[in-house]
Image (cartoon, rainbow, N blue to C red; front, side, top):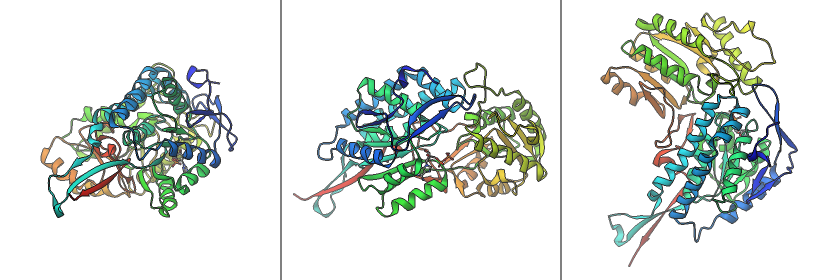
Length: 485
Ligand code: ADP
């Protein structure tokens, strides 16, 4: 079991109170590196979600909403709480998710960055009067809190994903009911504890209900007091939430799956592209929606690229995230492990060549969630890994000849989240980038999102943006007041 001053009460949180008993029984949280049970937390259900919505509704004061200055202080308070507890929250994150400790602490810093950004830019939400006076009126635009927001997040960034949503919700003055993923609720409980202890938010502004997804999700969709759902996770669940919210036309912000292409042209700096690919592909053990999923290398450099990449892939150290020097932790659960194995096996069965990593048949059926990083070349579009997100440490590499061919191949997916393009040819990049149907195009970089810039997907990858000014405006309703004198 995990010992931490931030988890003395590993419980839900409603209206500023800890909730130790849930109608859904209990939820067991395990360490994916060791299989050890870290904690048993109460599983909250529909009844507690209703209570949380009621608490959030009481915190919503539409007539006299908190001023922007007040909200700035909330945001700074949350940022500081996370910064002060970064090591301990990072340790808990590492234990329940499995990612290396350094990466886990880095995620807490990343989360704090969203609160910091919203605090710095909150004045953008001040009302403004437009310069024209159509219809003999002065026209003022106000940004009103959207109402109570439901925030539903996945396990791959146990605090990062919530921070993106919660920071913008607080900036907009919108109270929230947060449902973290079943695999990783402890990080958020710890963060809530840090925020609660510093008394930086009014009661009911943030509520935490962890438990079985359907009763919580359905309650958030059906209760009319919830006016917005912000969700990060799989496209299937996103579509389900859209259908459930249709009846009340609730606002949705959806950050869904990706199928990121990573394109390297002959003229790219090969070593830099490899370094960027390794950093991008293996972050979180390959379990992020911005991880490269399809690697396209131009034929002139393909052989050299594959050789150098194979060396780097073989050198990565897989192990317990708490151990110094670990590059890649375990996969989150057996389902995740089985998917990677299935993709590698399918690629090999369909003619791919194993360049690094073991043959999947040599891996034990169960008992360990550590998947050795694997590189397969000769990848073709009929392979499962080209169609589905692998979400694991598997690099499938294909080759291409022309710009037209690779552009068509990159866009040949229903998803449109992240993509990456490595070329030193300015004109080529300027031609390709506008035609790439992805919300994020890294040009000579494998970097993912940052608090200062908008991030989100096209096509089945979602609706809306998080981060940047676009993200800051997600949790407000513009209200236009033409006034006649
Ligand atoms: P992943 O495959 O990354 O776990 P999911 O979409 O299944 O993606 O999960 C993302 C989040 O959505 C998790 O918090 C999960 O509990 C939640 N979730 C899953 N099903 C539902 C549902 N029917 N309603 C609301 N939330 C759900």
